[in-house]
Image 1 (cartoon, rainbow, N blue to C red):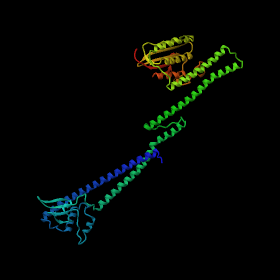
Image 2: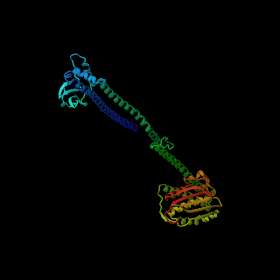
Image 3: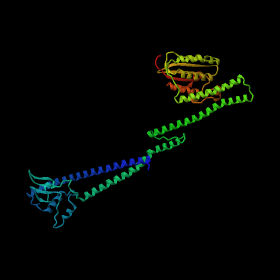
Image 4: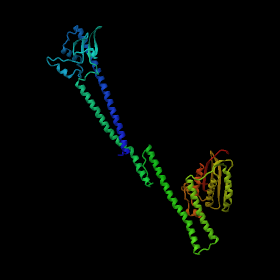
Length: 469
């Protein structure tokens, strides 16, 4: 039989409460008995003190113990006279009743009177039995002793004492029983209350495992269970987001592949049907579509390698100003044909650790985007500068810009601000996603923001390796 965590927690709390309740009951019982015995002993001492005063006064008045010798009735009267103020007499009820029966003198056992270790009156006893003895003095002379049993050996004869002790014993175990019952109720409620969030998370996890990524867990506390619920919600959101991106990626890839394939199919069918002649222009159109397909497949493959961390990087200390200067010279003619001014501000001497080939790919993708989407005439400005322990490189262009809400999405796969315009320029929406992976592999960051020139500014930050200022 398998027990759930609710039952286990309930039994654990209940067992702990039962053990504590029993321990407290035993402790209270032990403390009560010790305290009650101490109380009886103290009360006896007070009575004996009063008795010794009475006996010493009687001895001085009578001049000896002859008035008490073997006279148990008078001895009983002396005891009652000494203890008349206390109704809880330590003399047994049996003896109290026997005091009034003719010919049946009582034999009080609470105390005895000795003279030179000879019994004067009371129940026979000897010092060897271990009783306590209290001296009676008249002047400086010891005239006798009051002997009484030890409190530990003394039997509780008073009916009121016995009833009180029994009531306390019953009350103690009744309280223990009620405490256990209360502990059971509290344990059950506590187990249900503590495990309610766990059950909610368990049910949500089952739905999440079944593919329902929209499930969320309500978080009502700030403790560990509350943090677990919030972490679960973040996990569910990430899975839902990844599922949406996966579906969008599959749809976008299918769409991107369908367009050039449809063009190729139409061109080839036209050639087969004799509607078009295999002229150089026709072959160039076919080659263009094949290049688009090849570029898309290469980008997808490279992005998959970047996601898997399988892209190779050969890190060396380098000056990014030299690399940027070479790229600007390579692109200057193409930008010039579209009447776009390409400017670079890059002081030498700032070094970083990087892969020249991958960084060339990074900056080339960004410049290709600017070349495709910047209106003519326009301007593109590249700036490199030191930023504390980092190197900051920004590439910004003139109009058109991107709406504020869409700037963070520029690095998503297959995302394009205008799908028709991107397709016209040959873009598949993968270039900036690859750029982000390259920057992150170099320990840097890349963000998109509005440019004062009217377009978009790409800001990249890389750790410096020393040198320069």
